[in-house]
Length: 574
Image (cartoon, rainbow, N blue to C red):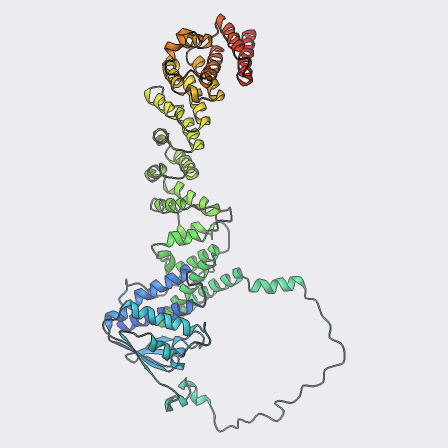
């Protein structure tokens, strides 16, 4: 975390200056609105040379351009005069950029554009066509592209008119920046001095040899141009410029500075540099007031944009995340759950789960609502969070989720409901799990029913055996036998002894069991393992009888012998 955890904080900034915001909270003049629109056009056109067209930063700039350009449509007709380094509206400068590489005014003027007129009825189609032309020409993407005037004419604007010139006109023979004209003294000769271009002196004797560069010096040089160093320098520049703005008290300078702040924050988002973005947020807040957020953090989708900066190939949650988002709140929980459903991984997943946990401390209803529709891995994690933030709701939710298809989650739910009070609800819950598609869940649910069901569990286990005898594996048969014997040995014994002897009485009790080898095998194992717990003199004889009848089946014989050994061992210790 920036600040509280001991990391260096930016130096204290002077008293805040009243810097206009880009929003509509503060009333602006028409010229200011049109100026912001032209600035947005220039930034968006230039962004295509800096970022991939599908980058979030480009999408944000296009959206900003669309919003601000509506001011031109509202105030149409609007006529903008193009000068070498500035754009003017009603004789007032609304855009100024002396850097030729960055100035949209310079490039328009250089290619012959002198006026832009926006007529009533101006729509987004014309505005986006203008952006397309300028983004190609102004960024120099295609060196062999047609000149700007031709491209503008081919655009076939409906409500935009271009005034242009071809070739030189007398006014253009004067310096583009007339303020520099007095500095040019034409009385001086332009001839070079006598020895201006003489041959180089002969080099000293000796041979040229390679001198290795100190690795430490080379590494230091590379570090100066590393992405981290550039990001830190950009934030430092914002800090210094904010100090300058506070000292100058110049509204125009402050307005231009906000554009630079926006560019820096978008660069940091693209680079996924959370640490420096957090430092920039602190610098911005300290300069403009504790309630002021970076423009990007004031957007509706700020939460998602910041979380997408957390790298999925790392495991540690960035400390800067708290500095950017603040303490998790209940309002963040639905957004975090939405992002988790899209399969976030690594540090991003951990951060989202942490936000859900902290934001649900007072109200866990959103977790409860989403649990039934979550994928298995997320459901288990959210159920674990529910146990911490709302333990009183955990049992109720567990009963509602017993039909979840994931076996691991079903076992976790079973672990919770087995501690519920004995009764019809618990019995039905265990029956639901005994019908699970997963054998491990059925075996565990059978085991729990045998321990907590008592005599009332006997009819349930018998009925389960009737319906499933032909489908049971020998492992599940062992579990059912143990459950019958532990639930109520006295009530189970008559049933088990009949199954073991396989006489006519069995047909009446197990009328629904198919009389095939599979059902007979599982029934024999159930009877043997149930009789272990009955402590009756006839138990051993019944198991030996089963052994004599199943000598041809090695698997059944092995299990029956193990049951007999267990019975005799118990008697010996008894």
